[in-house]
Image: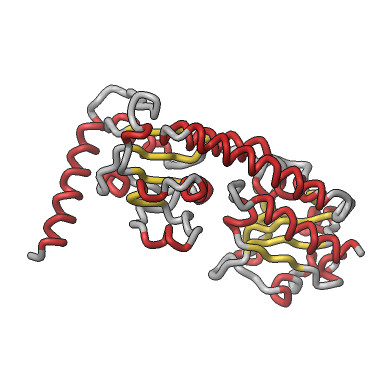
Length: 298
């Protein structure tokens, strides 16, 4: 047995022991203000925007692992991947022996979160709100958890100014443009983004209109709903796999083909974490999206 394999097995055994102990321990949330801070040097970041904030703060040297959505900056990909943000396992997170976990709101499943909070490892709950103010709050929460509040306040100030400038640049460019954000077209079914979602938030910041803001969250649309939405453009994440679709495939959908977007083959694609992450790059995403929508408007 190699030394690396032996160390990996020992780490996994320790994680299983911690998990088992947590299952029989009364619920007790170990918050970052009780542990962690500047003393935390084995940090796991859960959530792509959280990881981006850690790098933007210059604290990446304290990271030992990240989740699957943490793909930016490129250096983040060199860190061990403990799993997808909404499909985490206690064993996966604890196997790297963290002393602090930065966990973005919405991480899960809830059973895993409860086990981690009983494990004795410090957990910092990082809020997620799809607004400019929410980005600043996220930066401050990460900074507080890492014990670098001054650095976080400096970064928040810079981002606040950049976001305000980006919104000013975008002002009026995409006014009146009806945008349908499609999360998935799997099986020919259109899964679209309503209000209170990241897509709705970025459209508001870019000054455009969500074509299906009459419901909250994500919903499969009927042909009638698509025709009623009458989007001028479809917005999607630029990715591969079953959820991806090119303009030709997308607008072969009978209902989409009859919309203004379909008739003019108007499809905008942007990187998912860049577009919807609500982190340090959001101001740049606002500018890029507003420019592309302005071209459609004109």
